Amino acid sequence: MNAEKKVNWGILGTAKIAADRLIPAFHESKISDLVAVASRHEDRAMEFADQHQIPRAYGSYDELLADNSIDAVYIPLPNHLHREWAIRAMEEGKHVLCEKPLSTSTDDGVAMFEACGKNNVLLMEGFMYRFHPQTQRVRELLAQGTIGQPRLIRVAHSFPLILQDRNDDFRWNKEFGGGSLADVGVYCVDTARHLFSADPIKVFAQSTYHPDHSAEAETRAILTFPDDRVAVFDSSFLLTGRREYEVVGDKGRITAFDTYNPGRGADVRIEIEQGGMKTVEKVPATNEYRLEIDHLSTCIIRGERPIITREDSIGNLRVLDALRESAHVGVPVEIAVAD
Ligand SMILES: NC(=O)c1ccc[n+]([C@@H]2O[C@H](COP(=O)([O-])OP(=O)(O)OC[C@H]3O[C@@H](n4cnc5c(N)ncnc54)[C@H](OP(=O)(O)O)[C@@H]3O)[C@@H](O)[C@H]2O)c1
Image 1 (tube, rainbow, N blue to C red):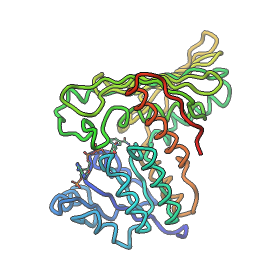
Image 2: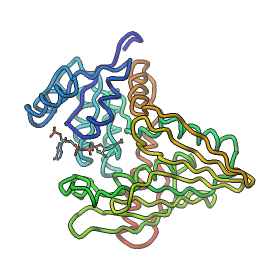
Image 3: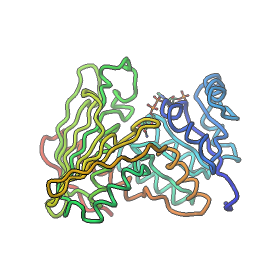
Image 4: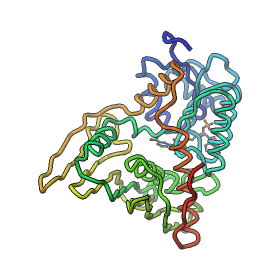
C-alpha cells in the first residue's frame, strides 16, 4: 500500500465494545475508513450500520471477508471464535486486529500467527492500554531509574459483572473462553510482562467459581520472574471496579490509576514516591483506541511490524495456560522457556 492510501476496515459482529469504543475511534482516525460491518443476522447488520454510519452491511462474516475492497478486519467476537475468524480473515488476505485475549489457548495463538506469516499479513492483539500515554510514561520513568530496580508489581483488575443483569454474557461461559482471567486477568499478565520486559518462570493461582456459571469468576495469582522479581494480581467479576497497578523498586514506587479503559474524556493519574516525597502527574485524556487503530493502519501502510508482537501475545497465552493449570492442580506451575 502506498502512503496516500487510507486503510479500509470491516468489523465482524455487532459487539458492544465496537459500538462503544472502536467505532467512534475509527470515525476519528484520519488514516482508517470503516467501510463495512457483518453480523450473523442481516437485519442486525443493517440496523447497526445505520446507527453507526457504516456504509455497507453484510448478513454473514464470510460475505464481508469476500469484499476485496477491505484491507483489514477488527474481530471483537466472543473469545472462542477469535482463532477461527482471524485465520479465515488472514486466508482472505486481510490484516487483523483481534480483541484480547488473542485466543483461548497457546496452541490456538500459535496457529493464528502461523496463518499470519503464511498469508503475509499483520495480526495484532487489541491491547489499547499500551497506546495510552500513561503506560508509556510509566515505562519512561522505569527506564530512567526513578524507583531504582523494580522488584514487585501489583495489578488489580475487577468489575462486578455479578451485579449486572448479564447472565447470558459469554464471559460467564467456559465454552466461549469466558472467565475473569481471560477477560481482565490478561491485562494484568500483559502489564507485568511489559513493565518487567521479561517472562515469568513460575506461576501460582487460586480461582473462585460462581455456582450459576461455568467460567471462573475470580483469580488471585503470583508470577515469579527471573532475578527474584514478582508480580501479584487479582482478576474478578465479583469485586467492585478496580483498574490500577503499582511498581515497587528499592528507591521508590509508581502507582498508576484507571489504567485500562478509563472512559472517554477521562484524565488519569500516576503517583511517584521517591525518598519520602510524593509527586502526582496528571495524564490528559486521550482516545487510546484511536491510537491503537492508527498504529495498525500505519503499520499496514508502511509495511512495518506492530508494537504488540507475536512474542507479547503468545507469551501472555502461555502464562494464562499455566495459571489455569496451577489453579486446577493447586500447586505452582513452571513455564518452559519460549521457543
Ligand atoms: N479492548 C477492550 O477494551 C475490550 C472491552 C470489552 C471487550 N473486549 C473484547 O471484545 C470481545 C467482544 O466483547 P463484547 O463484550 O463487546 O462482546 P458482545 O457485546 O457480547 O458481542 C460479541 C459479538 O459477537 C457476535 N457473535 C458471534 N457468535 C456469537 C455467539 N455464539 N454468541 C454471542 N455473540 C456472538 C455477535 O454479533 P452478531 O450476532 O451481530 O454476529 C455479538 O454482537 C471479547 O474478546 C472481549 O474480550 C475488549
